[in-house]
Each structure stands twice: as C-alpha cells, then as structure tokens.
Image 1 (spheres, each protein chain N blue to C red):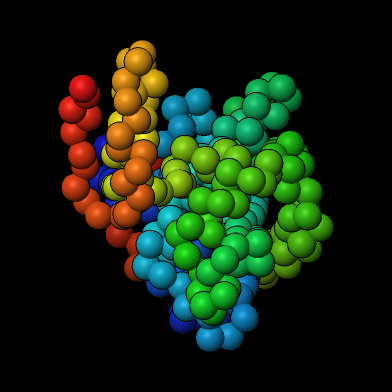
Image 2 (tube, each protein chain N blue to C red):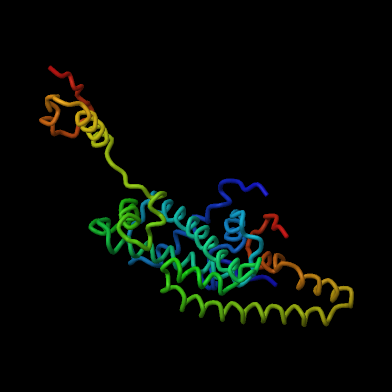
Length: 133
Length: 143
C-alpha cells in the first residue's frame, strides 16, 4: 500500500526508520513496539517545535527577526527543562575575550604582578605579553 | 550493526520545515541554529529512549511500549506533550488497523499461498509495515 508522499498531510514527518536507528543505537534497548516508535518520532517533532519557539521567544535573535545559535545555547543554559542539551549547545565567546580570560587567570596565579594589560580595552587580536617589571 | 555518522542525524529538510511551522512567518533561521536543533533532536531521542527503557525494565519487559514513552515524557518534564501524543496515537492506531484490514481484503482475493505469506508478515517485528510507510527505505532493518 503506497502512502502519500510529500509530507504535509502525514501524521508524522520524521522518518520512523531513522528514529528507529537512533533508538537502537542504545545498547540497553532490545526491541521497540510500533506504537512506541511512532510516539518517539511524534514527540521529537513536538520537541523541535518547543525548543525553536521557546528559544525565539526568550532570545535576542528576534530583535533582528531571526533565530540564532546563541538563542538556543541560552535556552539550554537558562531553562531547566532543556538543561540536558547544555553540553551539545555550549556558549561561544570571541577569541580575543578568551585570550584575555586566560591572561587574567595567569595574572591571578602570579602574586605581585603589575596589571598593565588591564588598560588595554580594545577588541583587537593582538595579545600583549605580560612583561613584568 | 555499524551506523554511519549521518544515520544518527535527522533529515535537514524535515527539521527545517518543523522549525518553520513553530515560528512566525518570515523569521530567518541561521544554518548554525538549524544544525544545532537537529543535533538536539537526536539527543532528545536518545534521552527519551533511555528513560522509556527504564520504565520497561521496571515492568519486567524487553519491548518498549507506548506507555513507556509517555511515562518518559512526564519524567523528562515534557508533560505538555502527553495529551497531543495520546491524540496522535489514536489516529495512528486507526490508520494501522485500516491498513491491516485492507491487506486482509487484498489477500482474500488471491490464492492461499499468499495468505500464508501475509500471516508471516503480521507475525514479525512490524519492520515490513514500516518499509511501506517510508518513501525511500533502503536501510537494512534488523530483527
């Protein structure tokens, strides 16, 4: 029996066979009945919609009429329900900020150093060596 | 069964469509955001499966069933999904029943050899039925 192809009228859009592959990749799972497979696929669709909508509503991307990565990682960090995603949606920072963080850590670890670098406020890529006096 | 990395991902086109359905018209979805949501969806499946499996184990069963998945949703704090899922399940079950009956009718018209074959089909793991539902199903389904 051929099913309607082209998605929009189907009860579920995500392919059950692919969902099944992902589920079976868990070693502790022996078998999955057809209803459970269908429900997992449908739940995943609801999840995608919820994650997208929540992130858009609570994020800053909508200031530019967009949904951005940062909206998503913000959701993973701030919302308890989505915290299981925190590891795969880490926050991103500028390379220059990261380098400054490293420097600061180094300074904090060394006593009696002059904080000459703190005066340097601009965002350029060059990192001043802490020469020390 | 060795899975290729892309097998654990969900199709981009479908994910994109589902996202668009959830957002107001005209909102731009960055490629990075789309890819992140896709990864999140795969992780969700794994998490839900593991959670559902715990309920099956508690019930001393080896096969995940519908109630295991619904219990998992509550456990994961997605109670909001339970009612719509139950509704969809009713529709799905009716559809499956309809298809099964259609096959039975078809078989009555053919000779008895065919009938034996369909009895076999109903006994196995529902893999064959799934194949009918998919558009392009070349994957080897186990069991």
